[in-house]
Image (cartoon, rainbow, N blue to C red; front, side):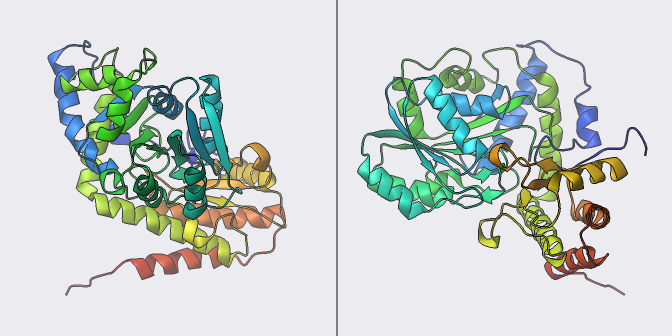
Length: 390
């Protein structure tokens, strides 16, 4: 096995395109240098389409979790009542952060592998009219569930327009169609290491006008994560603290690539990779954790019932240097997760499905070699049109 050969098929961090790596090697510049201002001004308007908003997208140095914390400390203060809809590990992470700021947290827990039910959430909101905010995840990375956050935001604001609705879009933005303004979402957040095909280190935060009014009145916004500071600096094409310029260089190249592909084609590619992956596992008689109607285009969770998930992962790593992720928390040993987001194509799906078939055979599961690959190929052919010219 080639030492440098590694295939990351985990739900983040995702592989970085070679051209993006090259872009990030450009020379550093000062915080307030004209070059830094130019690249920020170039990036700023181009990010909006991926969130579906006319608002500027804040770029805060930090991981995706820093954006979760920013969405909490800027919106709510000690003693405020907030609702967390937890459909997995990262939904519950909101609760942990909220508790660290001494908020009065209500957690609505949903069975792992299931999307939340909007009607049930609305019933809860009606019973608790003093809620300041509702926190949820768009794609729950720990399970591969895609939650109906747009429907939720519209339903909440129909009964209480003062509640701020926040969506963790870490494994969704630049992978899944997002219409923040149309849906009425108030904060949408993500990190650089998923659909944006960058290393970890940059958090993106979009804020609605409704949310800005609440944030501006909040006297306990913190210091480094104070979104007003970041908004005011971004207006002038700068940042309030030292920027991660290398990631800005890389982001400009990422946006170039995604725009060349076309945003609708980006979303269609992720849907296609999801469908190819799920069809392959079904053809191999390997159970999936999430139903078709709630399945994320960016990550697929698999729940074996006749072989060991961790033994399967070990064979993939040893034989092919392919990494797929384990489950998290209570599902650590029960599932494995396949990431198909960002710098990933249908060609990659055909590669890993073929390797999965071999690993399944070696782990002791009886499969027909080629059945999963054939199923993925059929989905590809169904979803694409080949034009033959003579």
